[in-house]
Image (cartoon, rainbow, N blue to C red; front, top):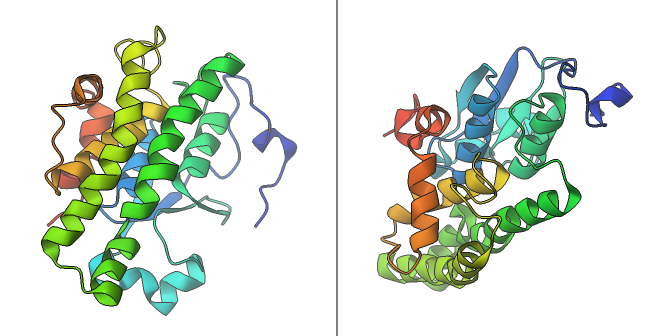
Length: 236
């Protein structure tokens, strides 16, 4: 479904807001790191939304009612007040940033925006896709992997991504309190959600002091706390 009106596509003025930003509905799962990303962004933007849980381990995201909403059968999915469907967490977050500019989640300068996107995508495009529930389940069902095999797989790919990420963050003058400067943004959202997922698989953060420091700075912020998995209505 298309977003109506060209103002929704361009970066608006600070007072602009895209139609349909009321009555938001977020289809998600409390432990999904991609869902966590979007919840953080919604909290940072001060947007209220209806929380609709789908238990991934029970297959609720594959039921016909949800597939009628999101044919991909993945979470998160954000439904705007006008019925527009948005999926894919990075696309949703950038949409929120363009239509609700304060506080900004991307820098104003083009090199800064490219750097933040680079850091975010190192997590969202390189680490997460090989460690999401679909892949971990397939390791078990297709290849007979046991719990420790799955945990080793998860830790391997996190370390493959975190080693270069730590080097980039630790050596860059743009890295300050957060991944880029002294206010949290898109890269920090992805970092915090990934580190939270890591804890379930025993990923050691000792080799990644910069990542650990940034994560700690994020987790004292109300938006990150409120959006955290353990604080959701479907948390187990």
